[in-house]
Image 1 (tube, one colour):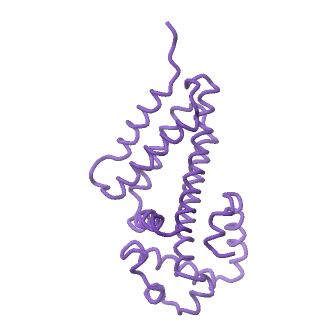
Image 2: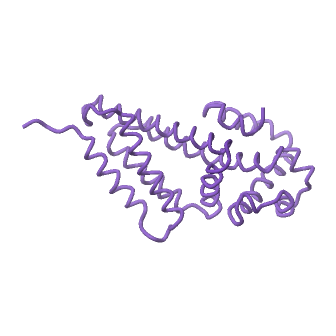
Image 3: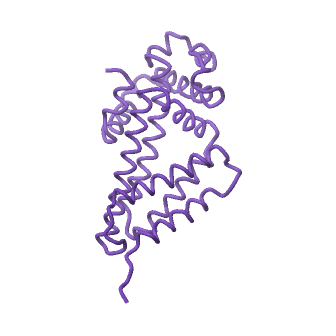
Length: 226
């Protein structure tokens, strides 16, 4: 099984367990872990600056100060490096969303907490933002990246659906189809996130996201019968 196949066949729990196991075993080989992390940092900078297509393995090796052999010991291809970088960022984002859903008490307020996640991602360093943009670009032309990206959207939609269903169950939201509300919420957040990455200084995107989600929440709320 290739690295790209692993990306979208393992679930979040498997990824986290695998990451913990790697952290444990890597203590016995600190130099090997350092080499891997150096390659990832160098690749992230190159991808963010020049794009995936224009970045070569030789450039990554030169920037990381490692040999081709050392790089291919850890990664089977440039694509495997890219997928590892995207995977790490998405796992962190999914963890944040899962924590938001798990800790939710007041559903509307917790949906609005998503705006802080969006703002934080937009204001993150240029390398991280560049990786997200490059991932979307590659998803339009690469089947493996497209399948991975769609799987991530499905995961986000499932989290939003659970939150909205809880709002329905507690009587805050009208008895709508929670999946429809989740897709609307996903469209709002992903659209604002993309626009914010492209034009971070254009507007206060956290505020834009907050106002947009408030409109959606108002539309989903149960109407009192007078």
